[in-house]
Length: 173
Length: 127
Image (cartoon, rainbow over all chains, first blue to last red; front, side, top):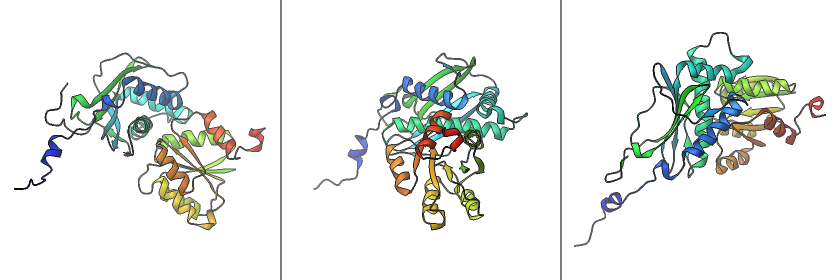
């Protein structure tokens, strides 16, 4: 009897790269520093020191869809996001920021960081419009490259995280 | 000189418009490609259009194609200003009819250099 190709063999041997095989924290930090210098201010520094994110936090993110599919997520305190918005808008910042202003500016920072992360990954890939809110859940802890920094002493994280669960038999962190 | 700035981010529109106004440009803003076309169709024709790529309703590439399909807009210089930095994407934008490509993030100096390359620095600034 001839073998019937059900695709099972290919599926059982399927592999896909995890993000740590494609990009490292140093590259993400370099991308973030360039974005901060250009968007937030020439003298703005990101210190690669972990800080604890507590209280009212907000995330902004963009999705990358391609050979690697996942999300680039920025997370920080809402007050820090407001500070980033003021820095980004400079003289154009309104006296009282609205949630929409923060979502727009924080989303744009995610868009710029995410676009440059995408460029560092194998392509071609597509980039989504930015979104702001509660961070998407981590689906596979082994498929995450996370950078923790301090901006003006406040904690901020940048997580490049896969959108798919781990394959059966794949190593877990 | 006039410039139309098209980006779905208000913050980015303000940044780009601020740079251009500092160089002496009069600017208008639009939140996506369709709004940008509406500005042009309304008769406000700039020398320069700065357009983002990823936007709702009509993206930057669709905008460039629409402008290039209309002979009335032949004189417009279009610069894509976007975080899309893959080489293939840059080639697509230029093939569609964009003249220049500026990758976010950028500095005001880098922006000015691109305008100089395009011959679009106001004379008093270029001197």
